[in-house]
Length: 235
Image 1 (tube, rainbow, N blue to C red):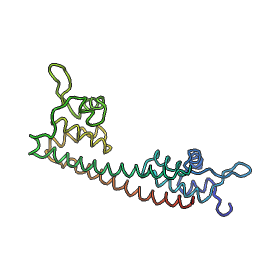
Image 2 (image 1 turned 180 degrees about the vertical axis):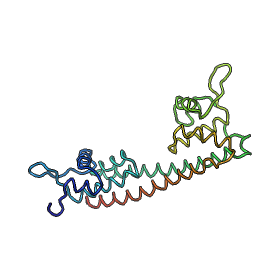
Image 3 (image 1 turned 60 degrees about the vertical axis):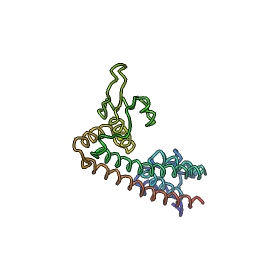
Image 4 (image 1 turned 90 degrees about the vertical axis):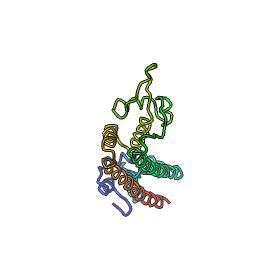
């Protein structure tokens, strides 16, 4: 085709996609609307190629849903809204890094001999504990069913009573869930730490978590570069 004009297959091949995927991306607002030939065929330009590169770089950084929302906002000329989504992802990454540090500290506290006799929190019922974690009581019951924690029962009322050690372990489980771990992964980790009396069983897990956060941070840098390039193209 003429200079500056691209076919759907040209865009598709550049990213290893199908031509149908290119059409779907346009329909979803990820790509700006294409021009049409008199016979109805789509005609793309380097601007569309830049948009596709930006989206491809944003997905591993922010996830498909957020990356789609960012591109839609840019293509609707709502750049501030798009950048707010990017900012939110960066804020979440920072929060995840802080969560990892809290998990690391909590695990060290869990295995520290001088802390076992002095847990940081008192016994609690399920309602106050759920409110403290900003989760539903049903979530704590689900964790109990998964074997993460086994609270005592009040002999008179039958209500669940979480001992100080239970409260500590629930907080630890909550932090691990924030880190993306499944209940089926958390239960044996907690059991291993309690049994081993040390962090060795979790060192690989924490290291993998840190690596994933680092990879996401670098992906955000790459995504920001491609997004900025696309914004420049649009200007």
